[in-house]
Image 1 (cartoon, one colour):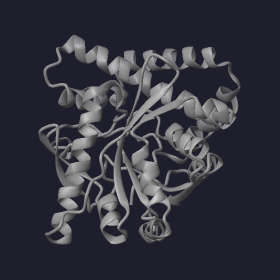
Image 2 (tube, rainbow, N blue to C red):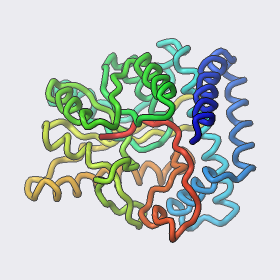
Image 3 (cartoon, rainbow, N blue to C red):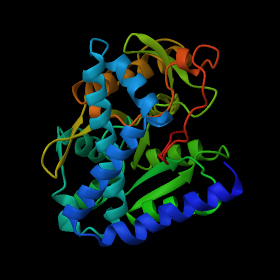
Image 4 (cartoon, rainbow, N blue to C red):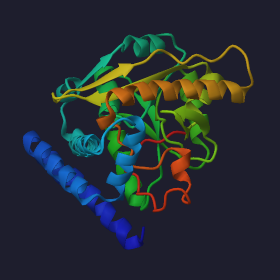
Length: 315
């Protein structure tokens, strides 16, 4: 992106936080849906990529069914952004009432054990809202990792936004994040990582909806190194203003094998839990980027990838 483009992007996000959070909620909902439908009709690269990804998730969908699913996906994606722009203005009561999570005892019991807990999530639903709910409803601070964005002022905006919601935010690059996360876990703390897309060259190959993809090794390595509980979590929207979630069964460290072998088995278990949640709620999977290895080969599928909306990232 050119310097001018970076400045425009930064200002647009700033405008979103400055204005959208002041809108009445019904107005913000309508605005998000209007923007989503306009973007979907334009059939830009992001929409095309979302639809191609959803075709792997729902391989039996007809063209009309896939188009309807991608439209619902864009509406869900813009709901995420409308909520995120408004979150700093939400009351504690609104945040507590905005999320319902099944099997939350798996998280609370893990924290009570003193072992530390790693929550690993895909890009489903609104992970920022889920984080705000954890810090508000459970009164539990946590540490996460954010991808460094350009311009630096935009990255600073997202760090300040998430810190304002009660999160400790570490930069993805620079090499220090893993050690800090390990220290937080050894102290019995909570770490939350979005972990369905590898941002490094050291990801673990997994089978994901029948094709090879690469996902971050960080969650599995942290669990092995610190003894922390590793819990997959999936999120989804329904027709109410409430977002719902599921804390899945812990991913255990295998009793035998090399570190690489254990990491492969554990990361595949995360991928399987993510796939189950995505298959149940494909319209809420906000993956507008290339993910599968076959799609990452430009010779197989021409066209530059779209820029990613800022996420939390993983080590």
